Image 1 (cartoon, rainbow, N blue to C red):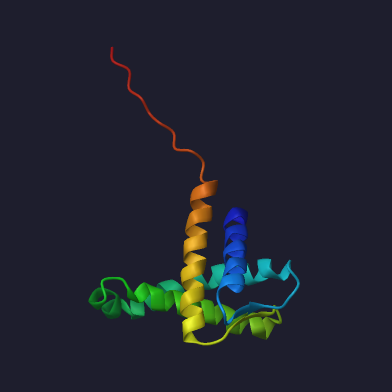
Image 2: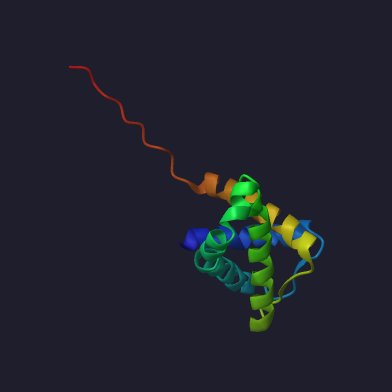
Length: 125
């Protein structure tokens, strides 16, 4: 769980550096709390939104996921601003691009920290 939190924090940091309109003005350690908010929203709110927007998922063959990811980043921004964490997303396109960057960076970092797969070999008797 700690690794996931650090990955989210790193991904959010990269998004603040690459995407205009995604900003972080707080102390660096506060980004861990922003990552915690982001993770909590993805665990609690996103499944409900997926269920409510299931027809949109089916019609777009899953591409609506990008819109929901943008919404999760925007909700993180709103909650972070209310908590005084200094994370802000300005508008839909910033949220959309930011969510795309966060997804890609999270995926790459997750692949890098996974333990190597254990190979099972069968011996012939």
